Image (cartoon, rainbow, N blue to C red):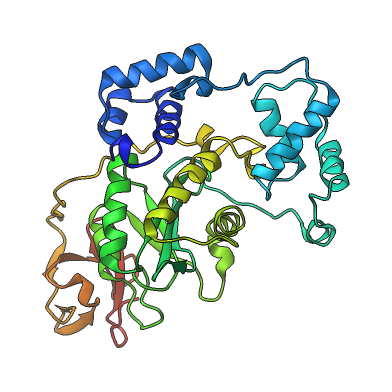
Length: 380
C-alpha cells in the first residue's frame, strides 16, 4: 500500500529495518512497499547517517543524553511508562538503552521507581508469572492468525484481524475489519502476502472463516484457497487457546495499550490508532521472549512471492487423479469419499500409503484426507 495511506513514519521504519537486514532484496521490497528505488536508498542513507530518528520529516530531540542526572532519568522513566502503561521495568530499561540514554538504572530500580510513583498495581504484579515459550526456528515458517474479540466503533463493530509471525513475534498485520467474513479476511491476506510473501503454514482457530466450528468438515473455502497458494493450514485444539498462545498474548497487549477504555468513532479511527501502535510494537517495544530485542530485529520477508494467478496443480504419472464433484465427493474403487464442498471442481490425487489398503488424498502437495478400503471409507 502507498505510504500516504498509513503512517509514513511507521512504514519508513519498517521498510528500512527490513531493507538493511543481511541478505535483504531491496528491489523486491520496493515493489512490495510500492516505493521507488530512489526514495528507498534515500531513506536507507538517512538511517545509516542518523539511525531511525533520521527518518522523521522534522527534527526530533536527540536520542542520546549522556549527561542526564538521576532525577532526569527518573522523569524519563515515568514519561515512557505513561506513554506505554503496560511496559514493566525490563522493557522500559531496554528501551531507554536503545534510545541512547546514559546512566540507565537496573530493571529492578526502574520497577521501584514505578512503584514509588504509584504506576504499578501490587495485585497485578503479584499475579505475573513467566511462561514457557516455544517458537519456530525461522521467520515465515508459521504465522498465527485470528480475529480479536470485536468492540464498538461508532454505529458498527470493529473486528481486529491480527497476523503474527511465530518466530519473531513480528506483527504482519493489524487490520480494522467490519466483519469476520471470508471475503474480508481473504482481501487483507492478499495484501499482506503481496508485501511480506507467503508463509509455509498458518495456524488459526476453529471458528469461521478458517474453521468449520465443529461441523465435521476439515476445510473451508478460505483454507482451500490457502492450500492452493502452497500455504499449509492448522487449527488450535478446541477450548485450548494456549495453542495460539502468541496471538492470545498479542491480543491482551493490544487491548491493554490501545482499545481498553477508549471510544472509537468508526473503523477509520480504529485503523488510525492501530497503525502507530503497530510500529511501536514491531520496532520499539522490547520483547521479553526475544531477550528484550524488538520483533523487527528478527523478522525477514518471505522469498516466496504471492502468485497473482493461482497455480494449477500437476500430478505424477502414478497418481490416480479425480475431480471433486459439486457435492464435495470423489469416487475411488467404486465408493464415494467426502472431501467437503470447498474442494468442489478441484483436482486431487489418490496415492497408496505404506499400509496395505490405505490411500492418501492429496491436493497439490498437501495431504487432505485418507481412506481405508478395509473399513467404511471416511477421509480423516
